[in-house]
Length: 143
Image 1 (tube, rainbow, N blue to C red):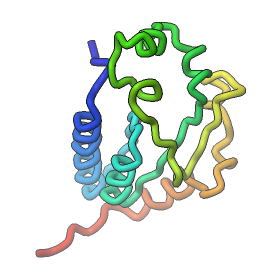
Image 2 (image 1 turned 90 degrees about the vertical axis):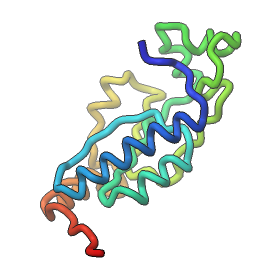
Image 3 (image 1 turned 180 degrees about the horizontal axis):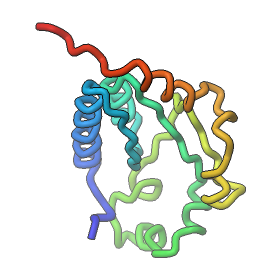
């Protein structure tokens, strides 16, 4: 079973490790798609700086909507203090400020949100991914 709660430092370390792996794969020409709960701006900025083709997708869902969709009762347990350091309840969630794509799920089902046209993105994120993938691997710096 995956732990529900992690300290800030463990969360940052795990995301940083995954980002390092993604950047190494990217340097070899691999297109990496990764999905993480990344509640801290510091972590997202680290990944953005490390990976050349980083595209941040913010699945924007208000806390009250998350709680209403919670079939496992994790938010209720977090509010009672049973689950410590729970994102959005007892641990902060820092809303992304520079997401290339924002998907608002407040007034639709998760499936409807997944089917939203990517053309609604102001930055053209899908086109950026495709164009950068066509360029091939980055050249490693020579020492």
